[in-house]
Image (cartoon, rainbow, N blue to C red):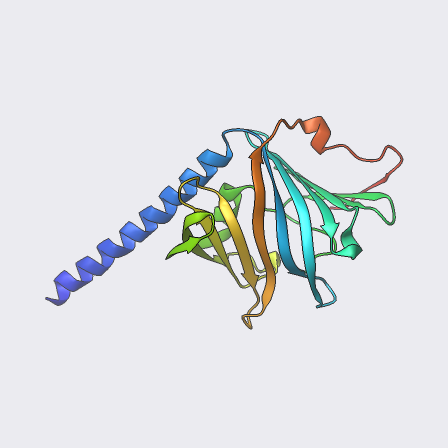
Amino acid sequence: MKKLLAIAVLALGLVVAQSIAEITRQVQTNLDRSPWEATLTGRVQLPDGSTQEAEFRLQVIPGREPLARVEFKKPAALEGNFVVISDKEVWNYLFLTNQVIIQPRAKARVEGLGVNLTDLGDFNQLAERVTLRLLGEQNTPAGAAWRIGGTPKDASLGFASMEILVLKADPRPIALTLRDSQNRVLADLSFQNFRRANLTPQALRKRPADAEVLRRN
């Protein structure tokens, strides 16, 4: 009996693992179909520990050389800033100083935020850096969604746990929550106005011609 129970538990674990792998595949396949953009709204924690309203636009060009751009409208301290994320580098443009800070992606983070959001838009990269597990399903205004939990493999990501809601009918993230080791919310964001868009690398990399460029290793 114990042996049969052990086999059943192992089989259940394999099914869950396959489910996460399949969901990840579906999401990335869907997001890779064409360039897309969305507005993220909610609340985020800043480096000083305060939590403020957030609103920014995320634009993504998928493919062999993926590219993403994040443009901030809120909080006020980040208004006018933008971030460009490639598979090798992260550009942080700081509006107040008119500077572009370029760093290797493996070491970079979004300047002005208390958590690392450089994997937004790249579900495969997220799955490599975070151990994902299926928590169940949830009904949302957009429809039924999978609840996916995650634990970072690298402490430098700046959070202790995450939860993502993935829309089942159109596999893509619709909400993201990040928490610290004390279970305090670091970021609580929803994806709004998702649409396919005609984006070019030139447009996503656009920056002020007079911006000072600083490279950091």
